[in-house]
Length: 208
Length: 208
DNA sequence: ATTTTATTGGAAATTAGTGTAACATTTGTT
DNA sequence: AACAAATGTTACACTAATTTCCAATAAAAT
Image 1 (cartoon, rainbow over the protein chains, first blue to last red):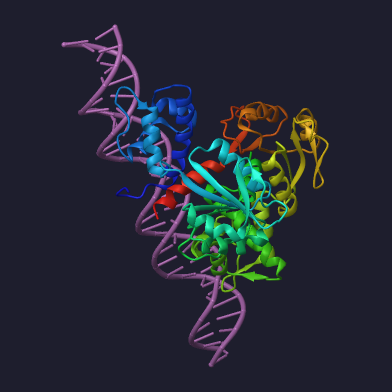
Image 2: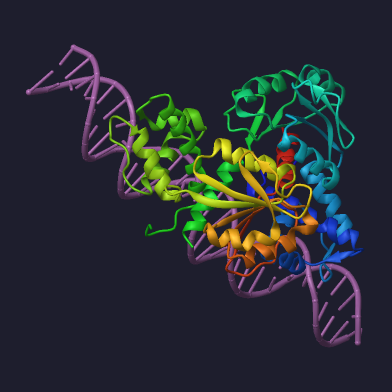
């Protein structure tokens, strides 16, 4: 899409801007300056301008950024301008939390279904999303062109679930389990490991 | 503890090494090379050696690293050599998931209690951890010298909960809500924002 | 005992990213 | 027309992080 690869850290900041824009728009704010974004995010105004300028000139000099326009641009950059279909594999507490969270708070991502193996919960609904048996994963993934799976099963079951996901044609896994996943190169895995997050935090807690 | 500040990214990788060492030790593996750690983690062997060498010379040349010795060293560096007491504020699905997860999988961190305001769940137990009313937070935090709180309440309630946490003497918050927390400077907040993680992931999913 | 092989650890070079500043440019307002 | 406000662009220093290279060391093989 762009000539140069965007720095990873820039990509991580874009969703932060997006959220603030959503807030501003719902409060009928039409214009925002990099200074105001700085106050909200904690990043410096210069950095915010540079981040945005990396992808193009989205602001108007002397005025600031049009919130709706900037929001559209960021959506397009991230690739959220069309709804992204995802599935959640693992209907435990974490899977349920993520499902509800996405449905209620994340307007850009659509949870198509939640998968599990426990017969007691199959057929239940989490808000309006059905819990299905994992054997239906491939069928559903194909039908809805699912790109991303959130993996929230217990670590012991993660390798099997991961190979089912890979087999269904899904190419990106956000792995919440502790297990290292061995999948074909065509599948991109990002680990979102909450206990690692916590442990690295404790380092800073102790050095205060 | 050390002369220079350790790079943040090194600190984030240490828990990864720790987990692998735990696995190796439970399989009675006594020696591991940076090459083998590389295979497990995906980081390069050179980087792993450099990460560890930052804190001292823990390996023996020609051989590798003694797993138990290295584990002890890393625990000491992070500050996990003595158990760290934490609390979880918010007994929803995410709070319950994190509580169970820590109790069963994270031997270094001790969840003292879970707090909420919903009278229906107060007094219940999550495995062996009691759910208490938030009004008891200060008392419990003082008694158990709690350093860290995981904040898992809905975003609307996050600011109030955060000020209760700050008021209880806890100095580090891992914030899972979407809300930006305004707390005194003495409190360190780290945002663990799952939807931002997901959105930045989608950028990479689309650029494949 | 000597050579070979495996491996760490440290120095140096390189790359990536951030912070700061300066300033031309554009827009809106008075 | 003049002024104020804000972006976008460039330059540069600084810091963080990674990669590369190789000497030093230890164990294994001959």
